[in-house]
Length: 363
Ligand code: 13P
Ligand code: SF4
Image 1 (cartoon, helix red, strand yellow):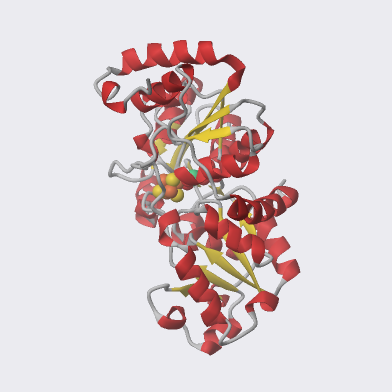
Image 2: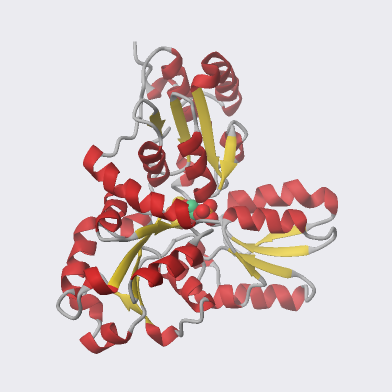
């Protein structure tokens, strides 16, 4: 009989842990667990592979396991389903683990934007649509069928270079900050990057502003990274003038401008790992990762601090707990698949096109 989640929610973390370990052992090579860096420690320790969005997409594409259990958020499990073979199954331990930024763009809004842009220019000839991987599969499919591409925080610059080699402008969704931070690094002036407000006709822009823009940035953002402010950096620097600042590119422009280093979660980990002992770091990314970095490197005398004075973590990433992980794994042992994530076949084909373009241009 299929096992019910209600029988797991009361388990202590230690009980869930023991059951996860036993189920993993029984499932052996039929199972792979992928864990994003933002996962809480009690889940993260069970991951066979950890990484940022790009690295985990590659792991999913290369995995031979029957079951790919994704400890991350919904769009990541969708990518695993799209890039894996049809006989493999992608599983998300808690279906409520979404991404609030991904939800800020939907197909209806993006198609409306495309139609409205067509009143001013010829989007299919002049605009490459670029979606951040933090988006639903139907938006990746939109990019696939309109000559567009997907990006992650690791490859955003390469993806934009490719995009501008195809067409003169880019429509970038859903994260305005990743778009702006990357565009600026590529010497695109701020005045040539306009924000498309999806609640307003023509994005709240004039036809002239659209014609003059190089990048049209969707008005989306990450609720976690928007908490980081330039004042936090100023206060920290006043206290520790010799410290280093490192931020994720989902952070606001002013924060990235004041940072010594900007990059994906994997980049942040590698930079601090490779830094000299006894260095001090202020880190602008999700709290679970920053806490892990603090623990991991304190024996080298590295001091790792969280950028925001308030506790802000990704509440949707946090939904994946050991109880849900134990539940999906024990169901697999019992012969039941629960919480499998499926992208409709025609949508998956088009989304795969945009993802494969990304993988081809990625470092
Ligand atoms: P990366 O791990 O790819 O840097 O992305 C961070 C993130 O917000 C995932 O949702
Ligand atoms: Fe989405 Fe932000 Fe959470 Fe990443 S940290 S999953 S972008 S809400």
